[in-house]
Structure formats: C-alpha cells, structure tokens
Length: 124
Image (cartoon, rainbow, N blue to C red; front, side):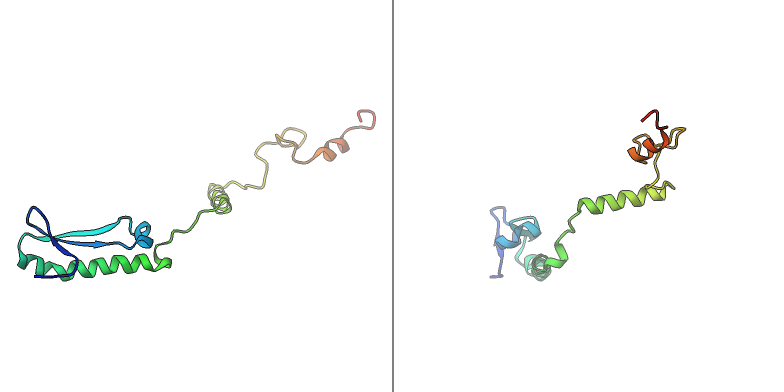
C-alpha cells in the first residue's frame, strides 16, 4: 500500500501526516496535519480520502486571506463602542455629569471667559 502522506507508526497504526507550508503555519496554527487512520491497512484505506479532503480544506482556508484574517480593533472603534454603550444606558455623553449652583460643571467646561463675565468689574 502506498498512499500519499500516510505512514505506519512504530506502534503499528497508520497515520495521515501532511506538512503545512511555512507561510500558512500561522493561519493553520500548526506545522503538520496529523490524523490516525486506523490500525489495519484496510481501515487506513477507508479513512484516507476523508482525511485527505479535510487537510485540503484546512490548507485552502488558510490560503484565502479574507477568510482567516481577523479585523484589527482600533482605538476609535473602542471609543465609538463605549459611546454606544453609554447612550444605551440613557446617558448623554456630551452633557456634563455634575453642575454646581453657578451652572459650571466639575471641570468648568463653560470656560474661563464665562466665569469672568459673571464677575463684577470690581472682582476682576
């Protein structure tokens, strides 16, 4: 019996062993595709085509870059997701969280000019 990628192990079982090409190893996640086909030659013959097709599918998927590349999460995407979540909670992210009795928020977001305009000329 001679089937491509099939070896007989020292323990006597037949194994499908196919090396993954170096450029595809990161996408596949391993250096070699291995599958035990059985302990007899007839079991190995019966299981071979299924193992070979499965290995071909794994390698084809790894070759197609659009199928296995993960989308990169950017800081802007994180920010937009955080805004969406805040809005789902019923909070307007553009309004100040705290305002004191003078109408200023905790950080004085109305600005220094607003503060000065409220002061009398004697205070300035």
